[in-house]
Image 1 (cartoon, one colour):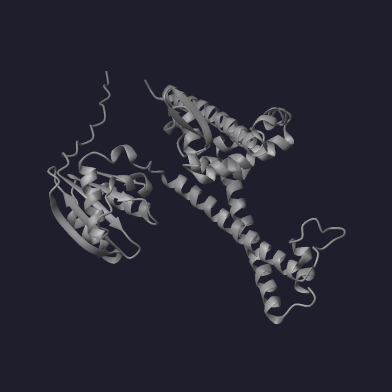
Image 2 (cartoon, rainbow, N blue to C red; image 1 turned 60 degrees about the vertical axis):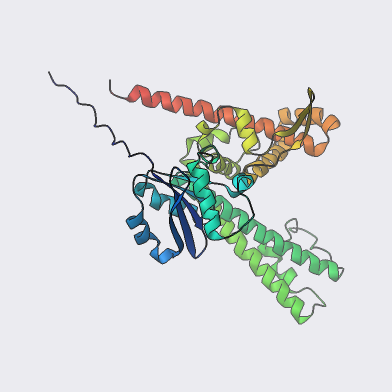
Length: 363
């Protein structure tokens, strides 16, 4: 009779003996370490990024725990440090700013405060969730799409300003419902009575729109390919108002739905929850918090706007809420309810996936 041996247990890391705070900048970082008594035991000033990897390999051990603040290249630093030490946590600067006295502001001082707060155990609850590589890539793609959309919007506004200065109208007639489509190039480049400077301005802004539109199309083509292979994206598109771009933005912002124990947590993460002022047994609700992920909040409001125009259920709900709340608040209320639907759909799908994996394991 054959017996199956269980896999060897993972080695237990040694206890933490040093807590490091890293103050990261564009060209260098400063590191400070403290021990359990909060005494500074190590300081390194202005380690350049060219030196960083060899320096880190020599310095860190499995008894070191590191804290870094969220900044431009945080994930690359995190990925490199993770196998070299006991643990790495990432914190969001606004979250911890109230814990850090501002009587001095130097790189060494900031790194020391980070290390001491970490050693005291005050930062673990505020640590940022570390998204896996595929979520980071999706977030980057969504952010780049937003940038080119914004770029095109700014250029279009500048072209509108040229028309206003010269009391000119947008193109009229057949095929002019989209004044910035390629068919309207001749109209824009032949505007009358423009100075040489204004002509260059029009040409530059037209070129910007053309470039941004092409980049947006590239990004959206890739998003379509990714969405076609993602069951969660296909699931979200069943909700009225949610298309491919909105679905992928939601998935990028949320990451792992298991992070949110209930829909209220997800609503708060999106900043769509109402502020509550409570005192003396009285509780008063206010505006939405607008804290958390702006991209998630914006696309949910965008989805709600589309849903109340196109779907009978949300049309009725909006008509019921608008007289009492007003147009904008009613739209936000629907966005919040749609996000709750998102939580239930993704949570149910995640639970089903876990159950399937469990059943497929050999006994």
